[in-house]
Image (cartoon, rainbow over all chains, first blue to last red; front, side, top):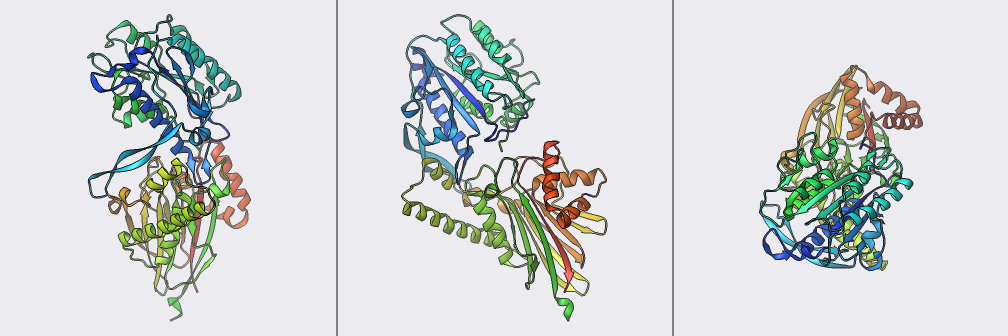
Length: 277
Length: 263
């Protein structure tokens, strides 16, 4: 299980469910310099960029991945902007071709002599920060379930889809556990769909990374997200361990009270599932 | 002093990974000719990194430059600087062509070109200094492997077992910023050869299978020789079946066999 090769003939998909509720306007972990919504938008744009770069060859971008971003706040639906507006899953080559805009941002690189220099690199933007309304997480999961089910009908042998839910608060539309379980029960011939959860920091409670027990989680909501998270397959566990995380065989794809560095690391680990061909 | 001359007879074979086409094969071997007659006799193989951008160009530059460098005593720093210069020239030509065609680089092409390309390199040079053979030198960065066969005894360079192949081999970068510790990663081995010795250069996937066979006490060179000499299509079918059985990683495969002969 979780060994299917990802190729143009057998692509896989990533689906991101992004909390766009009003509380995402709050600063990240007490840091007053930027809101959680801005930080998450940056992280998603950074991840999309990395996915495009991983698939880009001299002759063009190879469609190893299809990616969807669903926002939930005032409304629930596809969150891409510009020409991708309204699209559920988008081939990675189309994502590469159609950013909303391309900014220049400084990027720190080694100078070859042990130091670091700043270079300007292109930073494409597909997804803009939004923070308004309640937290209809259950509806977002239902939407995700239906999109992933459609994908699996068309790609029964794919590396199982990875769904990553990023939120800072409690659902306002009822208990989402049943829908989450239903997502985790869906499967391709290579294994069950993987659902990971990322809770964003807004309190002083200690961070919990890839737990294998609910014992150290501070509240009912954290326990709910734990229950909504898949046990990491061996390959992803190895990726997480190589990033310095300490994992157990039953560790789940869940980080509670995450900071921005962990958000980026988590997204990278969750989408680095296997080597593609 | 006729013994000062020798012939190298090379037989090469390469296929892309399953699902890829020949133009996407990022392995490269040089020289192309079957019989090599030069003052110095060098061959090289390189495996361009899958996640690089112009990996095919970079592996080609490394192998051709190694053979044309034409010595058993390579100053790796000078050699890499030369290759980077060649790469930069080729890259600027590509950029000019794109401008002429009215197709400017897309954002991801710019970012990837800035980062550069990556590849392994395995070079092998012979010097026939004795009536019955001579000495060889091999330089290696990464996990492409060299096997020297005399009768039924085989030596492997770099020393590696079948569990030692991973997804992050040492690589030579076309961007000097990523070559900071490169010289520490260069492995060098010198040895002797007798006329008739066979040398096999292999990129990682097939080298991994080959070493696993050796560990099981088998003689995989016999399989390779038979296919290379008599049935190249059969070799493709054989490798495909190994891939299907999960015994061969689905990666580009290149095998170069070099036989040293007295001229």
